[in-house]
Length: 410
Image 1 (cartoon, rainbow, N blue to C red):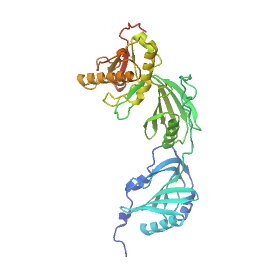
Image 2: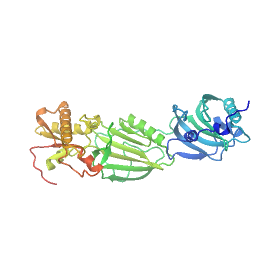
Image 3: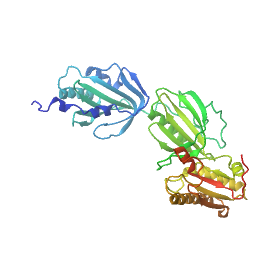
Image 4: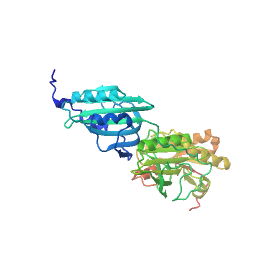
């Protein structure tokens, strides 16, 4: 019986074809001339393109269209082949599907709403693969999105940071505890004098954790975002770091052991990546307090718009507790400060609550309560310009002050 549906009714929707080729954006795509071995039969059913997009390690979902299917990771091919000698889409697809099945592929899901979209799997001789298949006519083409399951092609082992800060050249050498990926070429290094900002979990604004950082850049062409994030995520976690934030092409990580309080920012670029590291808090608490009578404790983080301390604050507060343990006569006022966003009453209340939270933390970690007082200053004592994000981040802070002290100047 002849189909009454018009030829256009069998066209796969444009969105489906686009989705088949929507891999994670990354500079990892290269060009090859042959499909994977499990698709070597394709040349007998379609006209293969001269160039096939290939990535060493990426992620794709099966199916991509109609619903979001499970993500598979491994070697990734994407290609479009011309279906020659066929006039009708349905019989052409039936012959192509039969060729897949004859060569070890199994149908997983089929869709017909607006066109043909097929998901198939393959498992032979230790090879596991998945393919999204889409067809459209005018001209009649077959679109393939293929993942051959595989572990990351590279791995990395990181040494844990030492108990004492490592000495490093400002412009040369790798971080002792953040080694580059295999195959990387050192591109350059420098000290960044601007603030190191971190967005705490659940927050919508970045907070300052250090006044400066050290940066290293590396060249590694062909590095995909997923590979970069996966390898460093695993290596950092095994070395004792916690992952604070993870996105498509970047990681924020925190190390708070052995008395260290390190923050790391890692991000891919077009043909390489950058690692930026900051040591939160200050190693000059006593001298800074003696000189200026007050010291800002950058790296003390709270839940958004709350006075609840985040665990990442422990490193900085531990330094304060250690200083108080050394100087038994020292007494401190813990001061809370805010930016100028919000009304006076709100900022005053928040600053007081945050100062009390820090005082409570110190009391719970061995500091006698009679050595501490807490006071909120709201937005009355800004340390920087409230007219920009960086200035507001500097103003949202906790300070410690010695009430007996007379400033000695710089």
